[in-house]
Image (tube, rainbow, N blue to C red):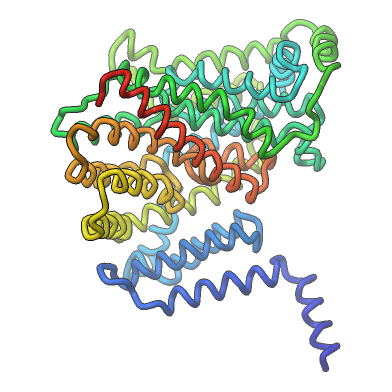
Length: 501
């Protein structure tokens, strides 16, 4: 009997497309959460949605099935459970609501555009150029990518466009030049390291300029409101305040990731000579490469909002519109074709899983879960009687690590930032309010380090397959701690020098 049972289990494990033990653990998590009494202040359907969200995250972490399948599971459960609506029709509309999000389609378009770099050979050429300049060691190439992102940051209001649409294709091309490819199982040679540097350079640079990512102007507005307009950060104020701690984070990041996730190929003494020889063999830039260069130049100008600066706000274009313009140019010029678009699996996979996570986060906000969480945090802080220093630390940490619940930085800032800084403004002495507010400003982008769905750039870099889920979360958590310490120590001291307190 026991032998038959074991044989049945083995057959089941071979036949079904999911991992049995992680699936059972995930199911148990869902059942336990559903059996927990609804917390005071939440409606039962809101708590059910929390259970679905947390179960989905557990399923992704345990790798029950591919991440896209787990996301599809969430869509199905939300539709069937009707937690967001009283009718099946409205529930499925809610479950699919995020797929009209411009951010998600910006990600898809950026991935599709990057295919042109590979197809035309321009990506390989750019990679070889980087190698010829900084290729003696892998860490040198990492610093090259970080510098590239930092230089683009002041002029690219979409961090997704910058990190995912411009820097990431270069990173992939460099990895390919070293025969480091997830499809061949060689991503660990240099690709994993460079992908992590690509991403974390993007999160650091996003915090250094108002114009480096979309939610930053909203942060400025909320800080001004919470302080009764006493602290109004201009573009120059923000850049100056974040200059020293931001540059220190950028300086340490490639070296720290080198320790946390070391590349298998560390020294590349022959790489510079190889790159120069390969560039000679490639010959002059081809016509299609020139189209790619022209398209990227156009995208950069439009993403940096240059036409609007010159001719007025009427020419301001949404970053997603710009991305589709670039994609259309590549298609109609024959630089890529429709089959390339259809066969780019990573773009469509990302559309499904990131869209589902965005949907869950939006519905949590819609059902009042986020408001309940932030108000509960405020009440606990007031009741605790803790000192102002502890209050400041708790608020900053809560803001950063509550981002595990969000698939959008903008949504997180919109839902919680004003509540948190308002509590701080009420409980922290006026003479220390400015450094607290600046610490919260820094935290608003430090939280982007954490997950593979934290911001628009993360699903592009993660979706390329160079970094495992566990490694991504591990490195992201360590980087968040390091950056928080740098801003809390070096940043606060720097703000003292600048006269903010």
